[in-house]
Image (tube, one colour):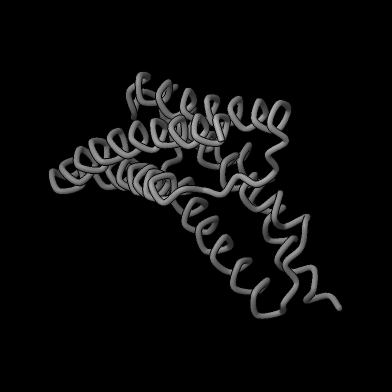
Length: 180
């Protein structure tokens, strides 16, 4: 019976970790932040695995799992921009894209009664490269080296490209849903 609640418990732990992660980064405690991000990634994988294995996927997990992921990622981007480890324009691009997606989804729901909004392949790729960027920034902050810096610059370029491309793709999909 207790195992049934394990996936949702892990999701809520990840959601509650975001403010602590913000505090760690603002205190320049990069190693602890890196550890917490890695722990968050592990619990994200494990709660999905446990939900499938225990066959306990439900509405709560379907809502809070992506919310916990987004809260952690947005927290990371805000904190990293505040401490100037990522450029402010990238934070604006990431937040702007998310606002466009949420606004479009709300408008489609209100005016076209659309209820299902599945993440696109480009959206998943964008999230992947955003996470890679965060990891490279934290690794570079923890262990300054030329290789981590070069990997960070590659991750920055890929994250920027796929964030913009997925944003445009979501707008295209939204227009298509609105006109069909």
